[in-house]
View 1 (tube, rainbow, N blue to C red):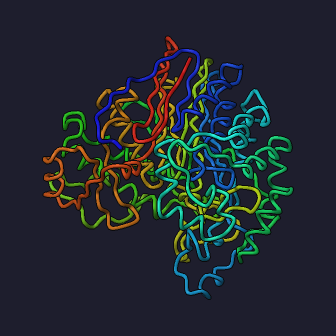
View 2 (view 1 turned 90 degrees about the vertical axis):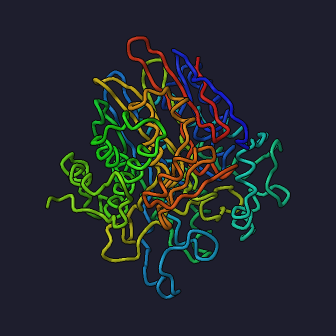
Amino acid sequence: MFNFVSRRSAVLAKNGMVATSQPLASQSGLEILKNGGNAVDAAVATAAVLNVVEPMSTGIGGDMFALYWDNKQKKVFAINGSGCQSSNVRVQDLTDLGLKSIPNEKNNSHFAVSVPGTVDGWESIINKFGSMNLSDVLHDSINYAEKGFPVSEVISNAWSSKEVIEKLSFRKSGEQFLPNGNPPKYGDIVKLPELAKSLRIISEGGAEAFYNGEIASAITNFIQSEGGWLCMEDLIKHKSEWVKPISTNYRGYEIWECPPNGAGIIALMALNIVENFDIRSMGLQSPETYHHLIESMRLAFADGLFYVADPNKSHVPVNELLSKDYASRRVMEISANEKNSNICYGNPMGGSDTVYLSVVDGEGNACSFINSLYSSFGTGLVVPDYGIALQNRGSLFSLDPEHPNYLEPNKKPYHTIIPGMATKNGELYLSFGVMGGFQQPQGHLQTLVNMIDFDLDPQKALDALRFRIDVEGDGTVHLEEGVNSELVNELTKKGHKVNIVSGYDRVSFGGGQIISREHSSNLLVGGTEPRKDGVAIGW
């Protein structure tokens, strides 16, 4: 995989466009648009199909976030479709087991299961901005789950990884995603009848059928049989939140993200820092550009990993973190000649796996939409007879009582999934995102710099090689196979620990989708991730 240089043009259209990591999902979204649906209808239909054809990355057992551009109101709206941890949380349960963090798979991963927010998020955004109802847009996902779908190349590789096989084999119910006891191969036709049953129940009964019916009972009975906290009350009281989106201005473009508990603020902080440098003069893919982007990203992550938490439970100084003055102070910690080895969070007060999709309709409305289980198949806990893989997002809570993201009852965890948008002069410019755990803010930064600083079109911006900082490990800077030796040598001289990544492992650099819109002509230009199986299509 990825052994040959290939060329893909940006996709052009006027009446609507869908960009996702799976062609079958893109096609479903486009059919919704062609049948009179709008951007939101198509986004939810696409997300539901992705739950089926890319089940390790997303699903109704996970969470969602979305940004929506209303072209009549000329306004960005944000929905937080993430769920809280259970009201039954007892940190003592973890300490009694000698645990210093929350396991995200296998033994004791039931503690990492928070309320799945996806289904209510789907229904909430359709009720507010859609023109169809939930049952209208779930048809294709049910059809693929019942009648089967062909497994694509990248998905086959992810499904057959040792980690995934071990995770799904750990409990018998995981076999629902191991047809005939094995992961499917490239080109195999896979049916997921248990998941189809769940999607049909949701189609007929809406979110209520998920959160206060037989599915909710199945989820909570399963988790409690494992020793977990989740109960019926937790699911019944769950509601998505409409929240105020956050933004910063980067070289004349307003860049929009969902607010904390999401990590979009990290991308915005990094952009504020990068704005202080003349990146264009440094050159595309140059050692100087890489170094300054990497250092800016490290500073932004230092702040984000400390401050980002559930704002309903902890104070998150959003305005201060996004101030240009604070960015100018953080810039002083970057040297052009060497890596800063002592980066920590600042004082702004003064002194796995995910799927991302983008849709723009013929009226100029846009939906930037992200759905996730966090790791591949989440915890690996699959609800018996219902085909629902449950997320492990709760593993991101801290067990340090002094940390803003400390584990508490009814609290939302830190979230890595971040949809993005950009506007200019009050009009939509981009609906974009780059899925992939802690790579997401890094992907946002790099694709925006590619487009704004270097004038690349959406496809070229995604085709460009990327870096990935190992945020959870030792800070290694991972680079893609194909970078020139000068870049590697110069970054090493500056003190960066560099590792070259090749083959299928390059999916770790994220899965981006971008649609740009030219206001005067309504020309839509789409790009899709070359490291995935996806496609941008329009009409």
